[in-house]
Length: 553
Image 1 (cartoon, rainbow, N blue to C red):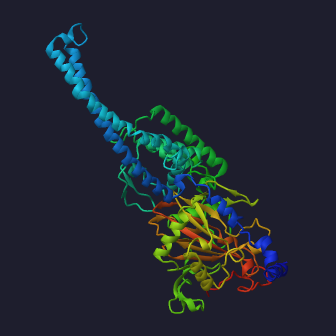
Image 2 (cartoon, one colour):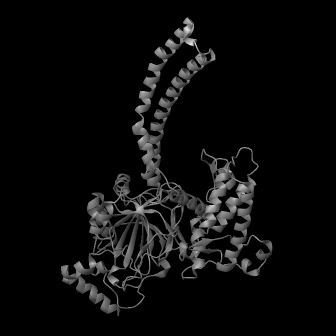
Image 3 (cartoon, rainbow, N blue to C red):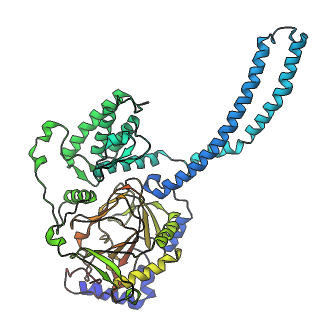
C-alpha cells in the first residue's frame, strides 16, 4: 500500500499540469487564490477580542472619536452658557413684571427689553450657527454603530470568554484585579492595570463564564463579586445582591453536576478538580493520583491536563530525555547558511522537535504583520468532514497570504527550503502562508496538523514550520502534551517538527496546542509542507512506521 502511494506521488510529479490542475493546485484548506481574492473584497469584522490587532485599531478609532466628541462638547457647553445667559436676562424681565399690562410704558422697562433682544439675540444666533455646524458630527455619531469602530455584544462576550479562560489556565488573582493590578500563578508579581475590576464586572464575567461552560472560572468570579460586595472602594452599582447570591448558588450546584457527569475538563468545558460540595469531594475517585504520561498517547482528559500544566510553565520531560538534548549551529549543507549558520535548539529527538533562531528579522516580521493585518478574519478549524467551523477550541484571527502578497515571503520560502531540504513552493509543495494574531486569552486547544480527514496522501502536512513574529511576555507557549515539551515565543525564531514519516504515517505524539496569551501581542506565521511535494527531496521508505524525517541531523 505504501509503495502504491509513493508511485502515485511520483506519477503526479511526472504528469505535471494535467494532474496538478485537478488536485495539487488546491491547498488542503480548500483556499484557492480565486477564493481568497473574493473573500478579501468583503470587509472582515471578526469578534474584536480574537485579535490584538483589531483591539488596537479599535483603540485608535476611539481616540479619534473622543477628540471629535470633546470638540462637540465644547461647542455644546458654550452654546449652553449663551442660552443660559439669555434666559437669565429674560427671567429678570419677567421678575420685573414683563407679563403685566403696561410693562413697556415704563422707560427703564423699555430699555431693558430692547437691550435684552439687541445684545442677546445675535449672540444666541451665533451660538446656534455653531450648533448647526455639528450636524455632520451628529450624523457620524448616529452611523457609528454600523461601522467597525463600535463594539457589539459578541465582541464583549469574546473578551469575557478570554478572561474566563485565562483564569482557568493561570488562576488570576481576582482580589488584585479589583485593586487595578494583574497577577497570576504564572507570574505572582503585580502588573498595574490602572483600572480596577468592579463588583459589577466580576458578576457579569462570572455569569458569562458559566454560560460558556468554564464553570471553575464562573464560580470563582461570582464568589469574588460576593466577597468584595461590601468593599467601600469598589463600585457595585447596578448589581443586585440577591441576584448575585442566587447566581452563585446555581453555578456552584451546576459545577458539581458537570464534574460528576463529564469529568473536570474537555475541549468544551472545565471545572475545578474537586467538587465544591464537601460531601462529594470525599469520594475516592477525586483523590486518585494521575501520573504523567509521555511517549504514548493517553486519554483526551490526560492530554488536556498535561496541556494546561505545560502552559503554566512546567517542563514534564524526564531527565533521561533532557540529558540527551543539545544546541548547535546548522546550515544543512546550504550555501545560503555556510557563512552564517543558524543556532538550533533540540527539544525532543524522537519525534524530532527543534527551534531555529534568527530565521526572520525584526523589520521583516513587522512587514509581514502589516501585510496580513488587513486580511485578518476569525480563525476556524477543519472538521472530519472537511468543512471549517468556528468554535471555542480556537480563538484568534487568521490571514492567508500567497507568496506574491509580500516581498518577504518568497525569500522566506527559499530559507525554509534551504534549512529543511524540502520543496516549500506553494500549491504542490506547501500551503499558502497562514498568519495568526491572538487576542484576549487567545489559544488553540490540543490538535494535530496532519489532516487525517483528507483521502489524498500527498496533501498530508509533512512538516510544520512555525515562526514567531513577536515576543510574548506571559503565556502563549506552544506545547506538546505527549512529549512534555513547552516552547515560549521568541521573535524571529521558528519551531519545526515533522508530522508524518517517510512512509506517510502520521505521528500521534505530535499533538500540540497554543496556550492562552496572558499578556502581550502574539503573532505567528505557519508554513505547512505537503508530503506529496517531497518525492525528490525526501524519498519514501517502504517499511511501515519509519522514523520521522530529520533532515536537520
